[in-house]
Image 1 (cartoon, rainbow, N blue to C red):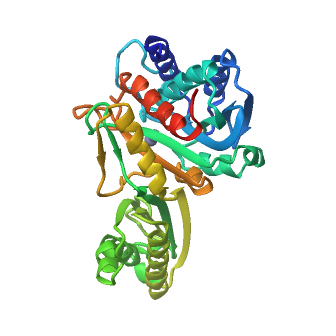
Image 2: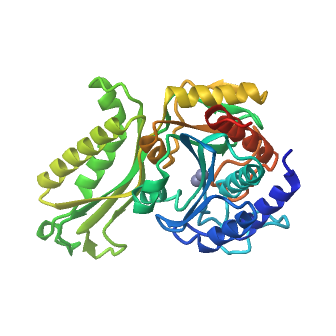
Image 3: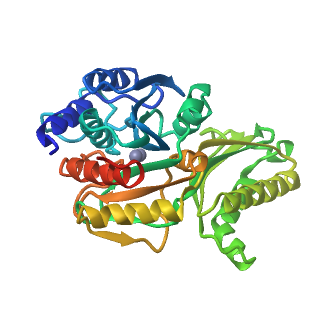
Length: 383
Ligand SMILES: [Zn+2]
Ligand SMILES: [Zn+2]
């Protein structure tokens, strides 16, 4: 039986000491210290940054099952005043990665006393999930070759869904997304003589308008995948009434159900932006930020999560549509044969992820632990 208070304590402690993506040194160290007494058969460190992984071997050969959680927190000032509030100004665990770590640590405690019969279980603490860089860095790390999984699973706590219930689906679970930065360069001039300069004002407006219309346009062209475009920022020239602008920047977040639809979104955006820039005699430059691939669940992975819910009497729903938010877990399911990510309800009336008043619901620790343990039991078996 899981000693719940011990892991709630760990969760609160991790919450108090958050670290940003790519800087999770102390958090990884803390996890290594806690795992020392679990005597894993292998410990891997510095995976794609501060990533750590613990391997628990079975006696007989069999599949490798990887269970993932995340080490990083967010650049958000905590609004909560409870005793375990973040001690670091401007940084806090607002995605519940502290809770996910507590769940996987609890799983480590169980595997310490109870090895699987066959294959092996890999408990994986991934760095830099929030920037979309951690999973791909981990998977591409040469040290990860020895850890290549056959099955990969992860959960994300999910405010808005009934506390302790599961939502899952086969196919895309999290959408692909990426930030696109469009820089336009013309030539400034005296505001009294705008005809001497090359202003990016019109092209900037045309690009924004076209971005807003893009999803409808692609749907009309027969693209079936769901997609969304949100213009998040734009800037034109400087605040100087004597100067006609010479530069502009437009930033937008592109989102789609599939990686293929993302390629189409990017190509289209670049094509019409180039067109408007050329028309106005402007130079144009594109760059990208926060690139996330779609996270895709296999049918077997989804079926096994459903089976785990049945075996642990956990309520579940099969989602009709993917989650719109992105997750870099898709990197793991892409290298594994099978796998799934699922949502674990954090309660209906609770602050949303990434909100300054959010906190992880500790009741989810034993539920998450039991669901993962059942997945391991299905694949690697226990005596
Ligand atoms: Zn997040
Ligand atoms: Zn998260």
